[in-house]
Length: 346
Image (cartoon, rainbow, N blue to C red; front, top):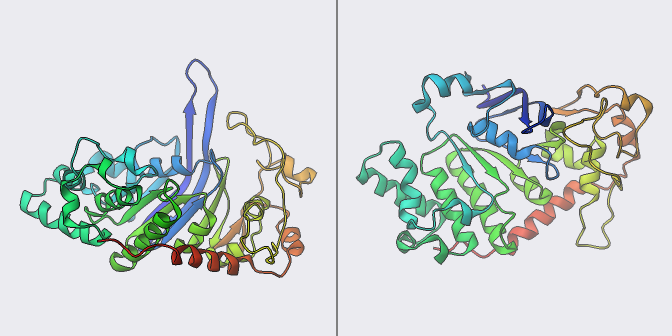
């Protein structure tokens, strides 16, 4: 049974003083298995973070449903909210903003346990465990967030999330605010924690190399819709939606001798989420567009092995790709990023 099931999720934001709404999430569906990482990628404004906030209950949904461990998540929050406390956690993009600058690190990490009613002695023990888990020294407990580096602050954020022993952690751009060395350390730390504890991750990011390294499956979002999803290896080796191809084509390769297996440029402006197109949302920017693309949203096409795409031109996109496998490049690039990271500090 999936740990998380999102079915036809819709989120609309009302515009004050207007009858119009911002259509942030448009009927997306996906599942997440225990101990699995699903990477959600897309440009800014694609709705990635809104999906995470809906799952956390920080934002009310407009339609669809969310199940956690087989139970309706929204109904469970209303009837028995205590049963969910600590089971779903989040690690934010900006670690400095996520920590109270007036609280010492020990209090920051222990705060979720106070809400759960854990005894002081048990809190102390679990704080020590959390510090060991993220590779921070005990002396860090007496420091304030401003006395730590960005990478150390994010370790504190991870410790704070993991201290409740969650089954699901939503990682919202957890490495984008860090320098390359700290980013590599945090990636390696998250992968290690998942192997040790079996925690499921929903990894929200625009960094394709990072997403490839940490994710088992990937969902590509555009204007609030998942346009393609599948196993990471399959999607990177042979993306079948023009938007996925465009994202991969935009990546700069560090080796000038390495050729892109495809070269697609998505020109033009992103449509407004207030007045979405009638047909495919990408039609105005897509180099493969035909008249049929403008009349209705393409249905989901099952390509096998959990790989699905919303595009009527997916076979043409497959045929135009060169045989070079960009997946191998991303694997090598992810490993190169990790190799420059310093050892986990203690």
